[in-house]
Image (tube, rainbow, N blue to C red):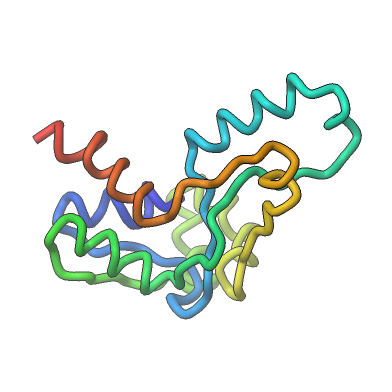
Length: 146
C-alpha cells in the first residue's frame, strides 16, 4: 500500500493518496524482512501453532509523516490528498478494487501499530528501520530506472 499510495504518485510528481486521514500512525513491514521472517518461521518446528507478527520497525509514522519522508527522499513537495470512506465507496463504483478497500479502512482511521517483539527476540532479528527501507526502495526501484 505504501508503494502504491505514496511512493509511486510522488515519484511521478503527483499527490500522494491517503485513506481516511493523515493523522494516524501506520506500521508497514519491509517486504524483504517479511520474506526472510516467513522462511524462518516455516523452517522452525516449534513456531507452529503460534501467533507471530512479522518483524516490523517500531514507532511508525503518521500518514502525513510518511508523505513527508518519501517526498524528502525524492526532493519533491509533500503533497497529498485524503480519500474518506465515503469517497472510496464512490470510487469503488468505477474502480472495482476500491470496493475491497472499504473493509480495510480500519487500518487508516485509527493508529495501526504492529508489535513484533516476540519474533525479534525469538529469532534475534532486527527489522529494517523505516527510513532505511524507504531509501532502499526509492534507490533500487525508482532512481535506477531514470
